[in-house]
Amino acid sequence: MTHRTVLTSPNTELRTISTEMVAADFSDSKTIQLAKDLIETMKLENGIGIAAPQIGIHKRIIIVNVGEDDPRAFLNPKILSKSFLKSESEEGCLSVPGVFGIVKRHRSVTVTAQDLKGETMTFRADGLMAIVFQHEIDHLDGILFIDKVIRYTARPTL
Image (tube, rainbow, N blue to C red):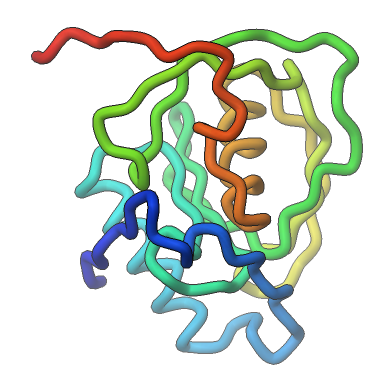
């Protein structure tokens, strides 16, 4: 595993739309290494999610690490449906260091994605997990949370 440099705004690579992973990418050693590098980078940067574009790779792969589970890779994640109800919560981003703001997102989403073996999974994400999926999928489409901030917040320095 290798710690990779996280690109930061206003780097224009963060605005590039990522391409779909294809069948040849599943179980490929380069894809598996990319997932490991993303996990290592996310952990060292104290994140709970990361998307490949954040390290300059324009492939549709994200890592999510919320709750008790180990970090997991999701390839070609898509939101199939969104709850009508939305919530406002504070977000930050590894690619926008030191900036925090309130973003309104759907409370729950139904997501479909493939794992590293190419197996398709469909599931519902609620609460923090729903927020992380929406945030990371936005990265795949060249969207940063600062594009959606309602208001910026001040955080005390620890």
